[in-house]
Image 1 (cartoon, rainbow, N blue to C red):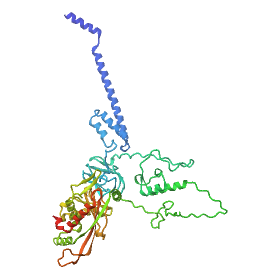
Image 2 (cartoon, rainbow, N blue to C red):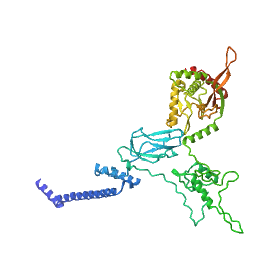
Image 3 (cartoon, helix red, strand yellow):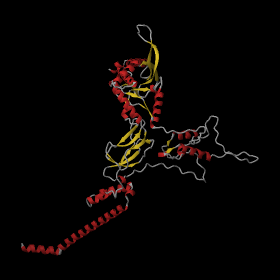
Image 4 (cartoon, rainbow, N blue to C red):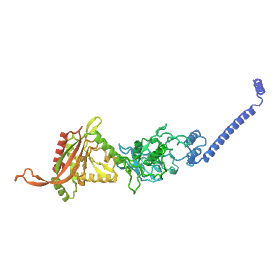
Length: 533
């Protein structure tokens, strides 16, 4: 056995005379390969570090930032937290990711808004629910609240900006702890390039040529009128107004360019040259000038000149809704005289108890009680037809410097006179200050407009859609009338009368129903104790 074992070892030595040195060489070769690979990784990583340090934060583009984020994922396990912190450092990244603040829809009919005032400055911190700015909608001035905690980093639309469309980016915010000065401002939307101006050598292109890529145009009312009157293409006007608005001056400049390009008529042959005097353009027989001349402040305007008054959002919406109401709703009118003697007597009694209520408060209460007793009048028109309302919300018309607005006294039938008076006073003050909230002027079921304090004896009001009725209230007047049911015979006495006119939607409230409602209203107003119950 020993002889066999020895022979086996000798045979193995003959096949591999040096087994241990060869294994050592393989291990050393593997170590050298690993060292070379680690050196190449370190070299490539160093190159990345040097390149990133050479790039300033504000020069990084969106593509560079995407590459950095990808490299962060690829090399997450190379050197641990230190290497990952390098890519997250503000000195390397392009800036803090912004939280966008866009123009919101603060009312159902709002299409654009005006920035009235910014209540926070750039760099100022704010919590969720804090007010950022005041926005004038088509109804009132509403505050915009922050939806998240953060820092107001950049204001993109300044105070006084008008006609800001819904969804427009107005400001940027960053999260707490981030550098708001390094906020990343999104690139503006690409603007379609306009055609190059014609050169002097080539012929001028016609003004009616339409650009190949149409763009959305924004024109002022005066500019639109000038372009439509003279048949000019608005795409050829160079907009100089805010956010690409084509102003009146832009339209006039385009009109002058067209007049300059027109060939001059051939001059008639004259025997002797005479000095030519240039006179102002003479208006034709129709009274309209050949082109709208510019009006100069302090000087009398030429025929056809006008001063453009910027319309607020409230004014535009009022014009739109009035036109819609008179063109789509068949108005019917009915009037009745009411005796205010009992109301005046009750007011004096309440004044002795230091309870101050106005005649308008009695009118609101009487109308609300009448609607509760006649629910067939408390309806509105929708696309599918009449809809009976479960609530009685009285809209009262309030005149403000911005226009007419109708704040709402909710559930007026269940409120007392003193509560109605306090609510109406508070809502009128908020309406004049432009502080009404959307829920305070939306959702009324019946409107009241009172012009009696302005000396108007009677008038007819326009229905506020989708409501079915509006009550127009005139002033009081003294009249001599026969006293009814006098046992001593007919006697003249003075009555304080007030004329009210009901404008009703003929599709919902016919003449007979409107007459019965006015009779019910007069009864409740002339018996204020009954209406107060």
